[in-house]
Amino acid sequence: MGVGATVAPGHDPDGLAPLRQTLADLLATFRGEAGMTQQQAGDLAATRQILGEAAEAFSRAGDSEPAWTGGYGLGHLRHDEGRCYANLGLGAQAVQAAGEAMQVRSRDRHPRPHAFSLGIQAIGHAQAGSVDQACASGHQLLTLAAGLDSHRLRTRVGELLQALAGHAAEPAVRQLREAARPVLASPAGPSRP
View 1 (cartoon, one colour):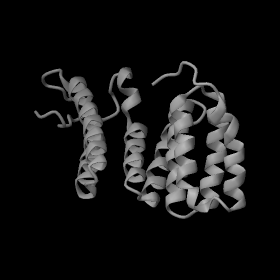
View 2 (cartoon, rainbow, N blue to C red; view 1 turned 120 degrees about the vertical axis):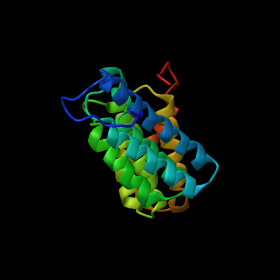
View 3 (cartoon, one colour; view 1 turned 135 degrees about the horizontal axis):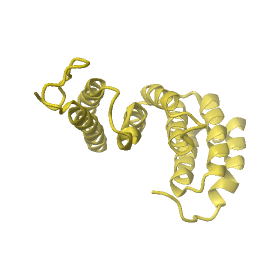
View 4 (tube, rainbow, N blue to C red; view 1 turned 45 degrees about the horizontal axis):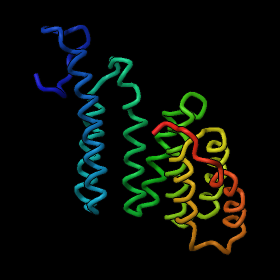
């Protein structure tokens, strides 16, 4: 049986079904990371193909993976997809993928990953020309960023403001920029990578 093969419930002839599912989860994660690499090279077709393969691998993985793989589930996969789309300037797709990631990684249970996906969603809104939605998401991001000591979140806030630079004269963007000052000025203390 291959790594991504599924086993009928209750049927595990060689006792390796849990290992196969763990490997399928890891394969989905690695394919998602490969999608990020293709995105960085600017290859949209390859990025979409690899992200599709990652989603397919994830769908075959099943529900009985070990607890240590929990950080690499659907929320992580959809977040990485959103990052790829945002980095390629495909705002609408970034918004959709980040929204799905946030549904899986709730603000209460997973505040840091939720905040990162919220930042991607806000950038996607800006890229798609939905300035008011970008600013609304940006204010939510600022609320989360103020409670989490994270240099990466502050960087994401800066990326959002950069994505909104073409709309700097709009009141909503000016208000967001003003509200972001304390978050951006906070000292970069020790934070998780």
